[in-house]
Structures are given as C-alpha cells and as structure tokens.
Length: 88
Image (cartoon, rainbow, N blue to C red; front, side, top):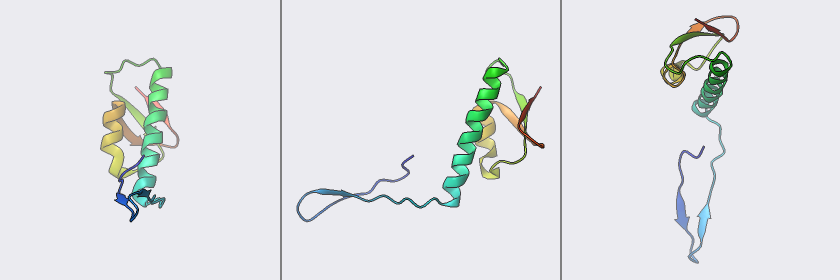
C-alpha cells in the first residue's frame, strides 16, 4: 500500500515520482497483521462461523501494536498458543 505520495514538478513542467521502498519495522508489522487477519478470516469461513460470533484464536505471536485491530476486524480474542487455531 502507498502510505504517502509526493509529486514535484520538474523544471520542464513534467512530473517526477520517487518511491521510498524502505520496509520499516512498522510496515513489516502491518504486513504480518494483514496476513493474520486474512488467515483468521479463512479459518472462520472454513468453520462456518456466524459473522457476529466472537471466538478465541490461539496464535504463537502477533504484532502487539496491532492486537486491537486484528481482534476488531476478525471478531476474535487473541491468546497465546503453540500454533494458530480457533477456540470456541
């Protein structure tokens, strides 16, 4: 995802775009969180859980700063465990 876009005109009225491709720790955490959200949603779908049903999900780890976002988007409560699994 593009987080910031800065356009600057050049001397001959053309536009120049520069990309900052640095993967900061924050961007890496966001990527992990998005992958987890996708995986949890897939588990929920396979288990045929109702959208409004709150369930616990065991995970070995997750980006702590993203916990609230992950829980809200997946309607879950995260707990530590050996591997990813849904708990009812």
